[in-house]
Image 1 (spheres, rainbow, N blue to C red):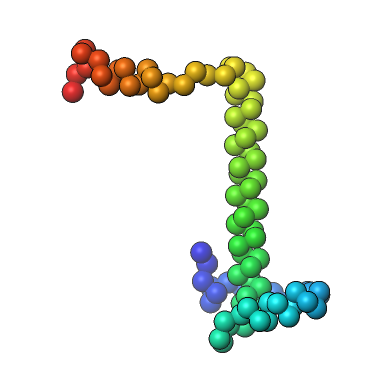
Image 2: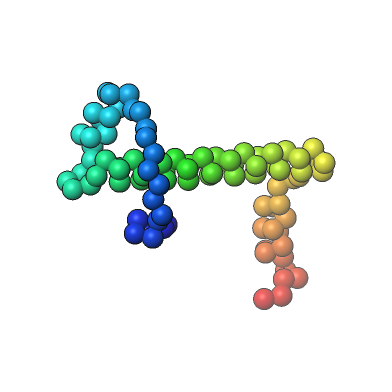
Length: 90
């Protein structure tokens, strides 16, 4: 995570619904500024959306592989039998 001191800042104007702004003000801690609260919230949302996008890409790729190769059987039993095999070399 980038530290607040290392971040280049840019001023923007944001219009919040008044009830949301009141809730945000009531939740900020001690000497935390409203700006810091909003920056942290936006950072969390950006991470959440990137995570969701990555999840969607994984699902799409899994579906593409499944369409190309069909459903693969589970390898658990094969691995278990190989581990328990008498021919196993440790």
